[in-house]
Length: 310
Figure 1 (cartoon, rainbow, N blue to C red):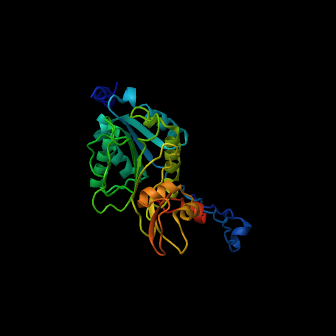
Figure 2 (cartoon, rainbow, N blue to C red; figure 1 turned 45 degrees about the horizontal axis):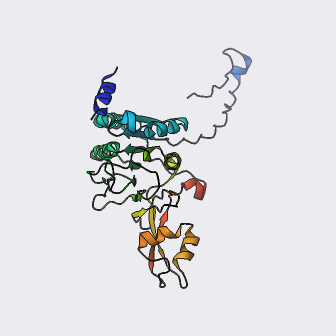
Figure 3 (tube, helix red, strand yellow; figure 1 turned 135 degrees about the vertical axis):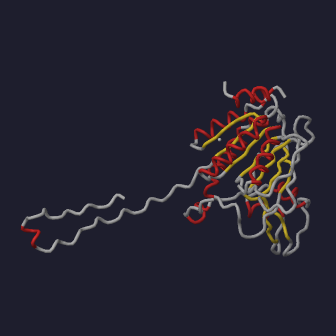
């Protein structure tokens, strides 16, 4: 058993060829004549360089070998999709972060950090360590993290907290550092029937959306023109979990209502009422600023071109 595995188990109880030109042989008749011009084969068209798929680091919580196995399930899906993934106990967070720094220095690629329970605490500590090394983090996801959480550091481009408010084992409501410019979204699933701290990490609907976001990272610009607005809401009991990335401002036109805005932007009405704290039938006025949740869209879906390497 390796040292890292030993530490993991102990902690559970608490990443050019040139074209050759044919020349006439020496002494031949052809040598007395001027050598013909060399015929150079046309250079092959350059092959587009594939963007790095990234590296994903997942962390289980306390007693993770028993209660955080959703991280293993998610890791398997990420690996099958062709992305490098590493899953560990939160107790070896520092060791994995140090290795991640070395790997990034040797071969830069987008970094995703996902943690359940105390693994979420680790994910933020991990991001802080990368910030000290001037390394960006493309995506951080905390799944019902512990209550006492560090603030979200400035080097994170996209952050999602999927949690259960007032949960005894989790319930951490993470706040960003002052001046945070990235995308921020907070999802409280406490009103969904049957969702508990011990199974929130195993939800297929969350795994599918996170996998799609990870696969899209190389082609999805994190910095957009215009304002990026943090969003926070409680998912209603009968609603589908939709992991938006952040909010954006929209401005009301004459005659608009929250219902017409919900239709125009293809978002549920309840998301607009919660984010903007406006009743469903509340009156709007022209040019009023309203926040609308949004998904970041890969550049290829908009222009057909890949974004530049991170």
